[in-house]
Image (cartoon, rainbow, N blue to C red; front, side):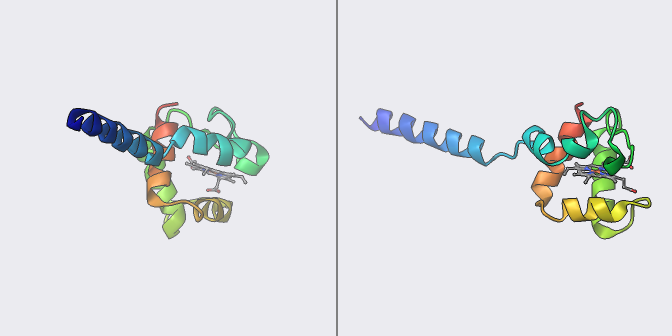
Length: 101
Ligand code: HEC
């Protein structure tokens, strides 16, 4: 009986951890793709930038730069506004996703 309870609680812990992990890919699809498509090109609203192929580290640096005002072009306010709604974990997860495109 003890063994069964132990197994049950282990499974429960694992599934809770999985649910809490941020899905950068899903966030990207929902919040970024309308301007940046699949990363190979951006709409006019997306400033025409190409995200694919930049690498997660570079993308993460740029996203943090938009937030602290140290990076960006003529439309940097657009990105600062978009990014203001996310936690640092979510931003990191999205950068990792873009890096894997
Ligand atoms: C409303 C349209 C819009 C949405 C939504 C949007 N972006 Fe952007 N993004 C832009 C624009 C415009 C730029 C260019 C800004 C500038 O002038 O620096 C940009 C630039 C970027 C850049 C920098 C590219 C480079 O090489 O300079 C990254 C990275 C980026 N966006 C990631 C994201 C992520 C991640 C999301 C989702 C959370 C997102 N964007 C959502 C419009 C958008």
